[in-house]
Image 1 (cartoon, rainbow, N blue to C red):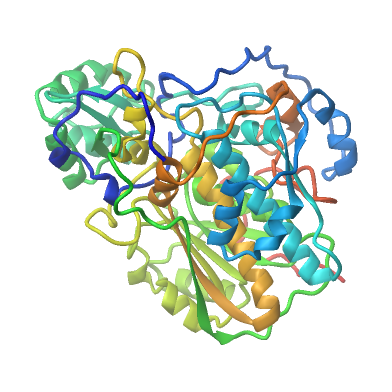
Image 2 (tube, one colour):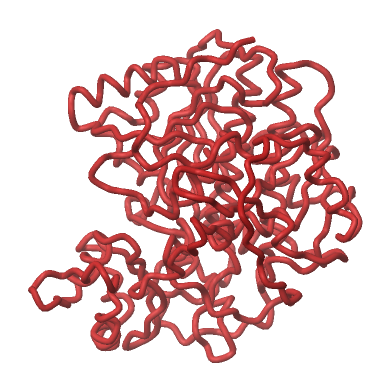
Length: 546
């Protein structure tokens, strides 16, 4: 797809920026500066003020009919015509082509407005995830695959779930002062400094110190006092110099690239490989597609946790495992930890390795979200995991793709947007780089990954073999840039309140987005809220009783 009429950014020469043929990653991270809206294909209707009421202790799985009945009445008509974007995404996870006729969409007007076809990407990724869930349910229980109906209002709300979160009435910090777009001597860079260690490395790379000589910000200002000094330092360097200096120090910054001129060197949206060896494990009949499925979640931030949050919604026992030395952003964990448990495990110790092996011995799925090769020295390379556990479904997620000079670099959605040319395409009238209306690379990749896992489990019902799945934020970015045909939005209205709910939790009352995945008979909400990070036992729950 070519974007026409896009205002070009005055950027560094192509040689100084990350080339579109080697890009990709994670989205505006927790606490990261939000975008300045650029020109759009469509404009959103003004949203009314959001309500916040006292949470009630209702059943955690209300009837899908009760939850959705009547809500679609104020939206536009259902769309049952074949959707090419959905068909393409379904094909990438090797789904049977005829099943896409089961998917319909309910319009909600001009949601997720942008120059690029974000609405089309968002609804398609949720659509294929819903279809994969319905297919697995039918494979376990027999009978026809349930029909899928995806509401674009639910999708639009879920794709910005982190912005709707309220924790005991408190909204998450909207941005980190040192994360965002900055002018350089010859263009722009995008930085990511939401995590303290990334912020310290950014400042150290640029020679910026605080009063005590340490390249860190004080705990209370999160870097606010250093904005001026960072602005001055960046203005004296080229975008390429900033990018490489910060990378060498272990920090995160990329040169903002111009809009790509072609789709040469596109990365695949997904890679699926059937692995050797069989487990003989077949999932028995169950009321939910992933009931009894044990998922080891080795992911962080947004994309991976969105995928495993979705698997938890569908009944999986998801155990997130984190190293004790790198705490997760609390609000990000609350938003993406729904339905899951969270444990700490030090894989650099013999005890941690023993515990992990015990978990692996009865796991069905392992999902990893680290840079290629970073887990290998701990014995967690995909090939080794599958050799130790035949029939295992292993899903891997990274930022910049699985080959090329950037494969080993750290990345987030916002950085991938900047390096792939998305920030240039979404630029404002003044030429300031822009961003998508949601962390669409993160969320979209998350739903695609969940769809891939569900499809792999369906295939395992037949052949008993595991699968190796690979996804990247860069691959999703390429798809958005070159593989999706924009379509006019349907009629209808959208109010986010219709897709928010409130739930008691250990963190206090939570207001959060409802899941957008929906098929006939699907659950409306997670069975439990997010637990406190790192406080659960590193052990599986007892298997469900038949």
